[in-house]
Image 1 (cartoon, rainbow, N blue to C red):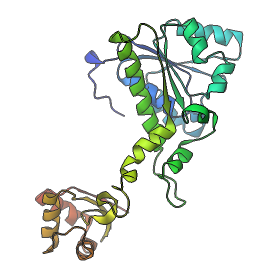
Image 2 (image 1 turned 90 degrees about the vertical axis):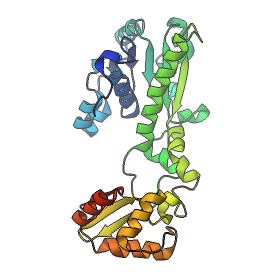
Image 3 (image 1 turned 90 degrees about the horizontal axis):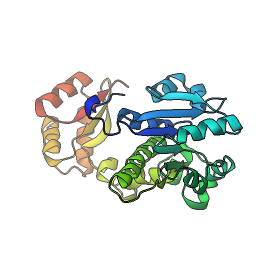
Image 4 (image 1 turned 30 degrees about the horizontal axis):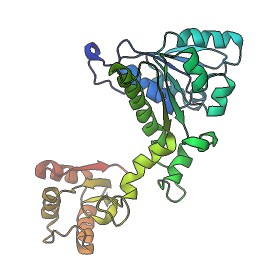
Length: 292
């Protein structure tokens, strides 16, 4: 993962963020903040972060540039270390259920009373009473209609979308303070099922449903088999679609018509990846070939 922000102008330089969040959404959000220049500290329990067991390479990538310390928050020593760190922290990032935070004395009322300048970004599964429900990326995506059949989604959309929303919430908390909207810290909550709902909006609107233009109904926006692999064609706009049809020798420009689908599919099926890539370069058509 590359950082496109120049080191001399990182917007979160000097901001101190402490994270207790494990697994994926919290660490991914923390990494986003680190890449914007924040000084990031993560406190892990003695057993460590489960992500290190699932995938060591992913764990290492997620924690690049992050200071990691171990603290047993169920012990007096761990609590003391935590609150000493919080006294120097601008934003606390958590991903525990509310009841778990309360058991650790870290519910918002207690935190705010002890550290009034501290803001908290809490990642939860859902808002309100549903915040206590167990869940993971797969269940949130299924709830949002993004799981079809029995195949698993290609990636962890809700978790990664939630990480972006959480890093956005960090920026929001800091902006509220910087603009004088509040003199104290604020509590902001990010729900992973809301992240899934946000990502599902194109499907909810019908765009990616089978009858939608980017759901398979448009002949210029599909994945086709070719002679030696597959090709993802994204000739959606009329000028791209016209160039594709010209290359395929089709008179019709009705990209929703079955005959156009059949014509494009038949033409692509007879071409190799190299031939399709050459056509795309020559005619400026957006596509990407795949080996299998």
